[in-house]
Length: 77
Image (cartoon, rainbow, N blue to C red; front, side):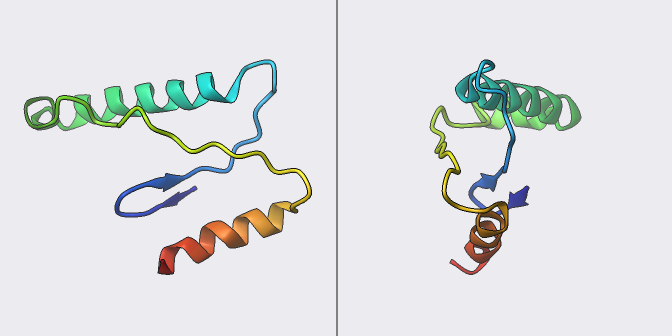
């Protein structure tokens, strides 16, 4: 995981039968619920915590190290 000011990178190993879109939606829903419980003022200031957008990519011919290096390099962008 890499947390940047305007987005989060997650490197996940997901069972294809689960569906990555469902997994990402579940993570966004859970984190929104937890953050709003911990910081109640978020409910008043933001109608939604996360946008509905997401970028999902699969890793095929790239090594795990290559993906981790890409995420690490995003800090400077």
